[in-house]
Amino acid sequence: MAEIVPRGYVFVVSFNFGDNESCIASSFIHEPANVWAFTYGPYRELEQSSILLNPERKYDGFGLEADRKYGKLKSRNISENWWFFRSFSKPESSPDGIVVRDDKGRPFSFESLMVIVLQCMGDKVNSVLDENKVRITMADALLVITTPSHWHSHEKGCVYRAMSKTNLNTSYVLFISNIEASAICCYHALKDKKQEELGISQFFVFWDDGVIDVALIDKKFDGSFRLTFLESKKITTVDDIFKDWLQQETKDTRLKDIIQDSGDAIYLRDVLHEKLKSSSYPLRVSLSPATVNILESCGKFTLKRDQILFNEEVVETIYSQYMRDGLQLIDRYLNNTEYKDTTTVFFVGRASVYPFIKNKMNQRAKSVITSTLPGFTFAKGSVLYGHYPYVLATSVIRFGEESRSSVLENRFTKKVTGREFLAAVAIDFGTTYSGYAYALSNDPSKIYANKPWTSGERLLSQKSPTCVLVNHNLQFDSFGYEAEKKYAKYLEADGNDDDADKFYLFRRFKMELHLRENVSVT
Image (tube, rainbow, N blue to C red; front, side):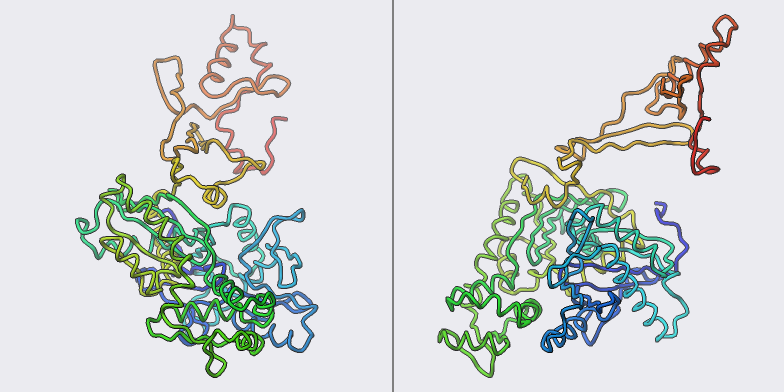
């Protein structure tokens, strides 16, 4: 199968934007599967999606460095004019366009911020390459931007425009969502499995902080695969569950604000994720003195050296609702007779590393395949997508009565003037011939082409000549075969071409765009 992206690059680099964490990954064209990360520290492939700007709105820090710097500024009460974005990948619409809000709630142009983020990540790549004395730069790379699944065309457009304002000079740019990238990484693992062991289709479960997606992976005869989203559901994040439980147990309404202001919120998000990977108990979590004072006064918690200790039973009690929300959704499809032959589950996302959730999944499915580096799955998949962009043949959503949800529509359905679209229409303006096709939103996999045009010479074609006929007022008259027939009729009428002089026929008009930016008939 021919490559979609022309060969002209030396390596693929992926900038992976997550709501909580981001990273950079890469591999060379001679070893596509050998994906490596641009680390931010020992054993740290992932970095917080945080960035700090000084009062002049210039870059000052990224990730954990930005978080620490901002914490020191706050402790000295000199942070007022600084801009700290705890998650730069959560933009929102406003009357002034797409913006992202800083820690104080102030709006900042998303496109302008992405110029800084992209330049920062590009500089990181170039500096690492230079340190290792590799004589290539970002100019030799194909860049893949991995975005959160809730991003739509507006957000991607901001990033694309931001690219042109950097000095990265990247030749090619591709976009893919983190869920699709994770699916590609899982699909790549199929090469090591026998098809009869896996079945025709495999479930793909993306269970991350705040959201769970269930999809099907279907292998196609040409080596690509089809990804069909079945359902998406928003769930409470791990650190929110923990904070809610602490507040409920202490009956202290100040606790949530103290956790947020003290920096415990970020700490809980990252530390709990690491701690919950472990099967060793008691679970120890260090918190700030302000939080510890409230917990001590409550008298319900076991504390040791400013650490709060939890046994396994308490941990499962805290996260019982978190597990129940996700497992109920998964059970709905594992127990559905429509998917009785689908017995393999690819399980990725933060939840895939928690032993108490993995055990529940193993009890439900015949075969559960997880990644050894779940946080890096989407980064590896996006790099592989850069090398093999044809591997993801289609990515669609199934809108059945049982699987339809408002969350799914909000996250995956484009909005047109505030309304859901009824159909997706593709128009092909060819140099010589043109055509169109469409699919209805309630059955996106069924593609309809136009009824065959006729030339009047017993020729049926689903394409029509790319020509248009306009009258003397420069108003549209007809298109394609109809335009050709009508113009020819005027020319042949009694040898009098006065009527023909009143019309203009444009053949292959698209070619004019190669010569002039603005095309008119005058």
